Image (tube, rainbow, N blue to C red; front, side, top):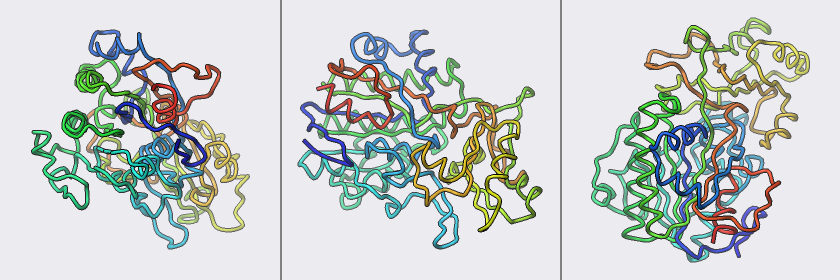
Length: 404
């Protein structure tokens, strides 16, 4: 048994694959299965376990991927967004560096226990976090042409997979993850494999549309191949996805920095959008979670009350309330946390968001309305407590302690 972050795990008895499908609102799967686009998943739901679970809020990529591989919420592992305001240095930074990680990963622990581990992620922004202190294979689709044995534990990924480096803004970036996973299982047969995709398709295509169904058909085919090789497979997501538009189809945005500047004076408050990353063409850095930093002595309670009354806000909390409700590290969020409603996103200032890259109605995530995600296992789960609140970061618990 391994003990990681106060949770115990059995060592794998069969090759184990945990898949995080970025932005996989459960309805994507339901629509694809119902219309015959995912025959493997339909069979799997009949013989295995088809559950739903809660992801971490903010429902963004980095916090949830790190929760899945640590088996713990951000209050334990420290990664509370894709982006944060570093109060020590007074600068806004990406949370891509492992220095922000406060807890060990299960992947590293499994490798230390003598198990062969492989990680394939779509975007390189996650690679160093997921592979922190892990002996094994770890690379991204985005930088698949730059792998080295020393840095990534493998050479010539393009030769292995037989595909060129895909565009970051394409479904191909995620397909490369699945294709690489299948090739690794065929040639290396790792004991444990973690595959993490990108949500480019989900940002552009609603459940049941041809673009979405094509993506899930592709995924279904690769998962069927892993299943045929005897793998225990757990499928979950980092977050869901919703349309974020007004009745006229334009983005429904609360520009929170503009609101604060008007209410408090220009530049008094600092609004941080933790969705921010280098890949903003498909969402314009607009998500449903924001945090506000205020000067010492500010009337935080009064501002919370005023913001809570703003149309489009689902919940507005103080730092302490948000840290408790969402299991976040209190020292890495602002004085106020704002979560917008299902159809609404939060921006900073209208002048700072370039929405020219949006060629479809805005779809995004970050709030409580994107918290429900699939948690599917291709095996029965004897002994699992049916009353237990399941989280996406229970994926490895189900895979190792119940499915085999």
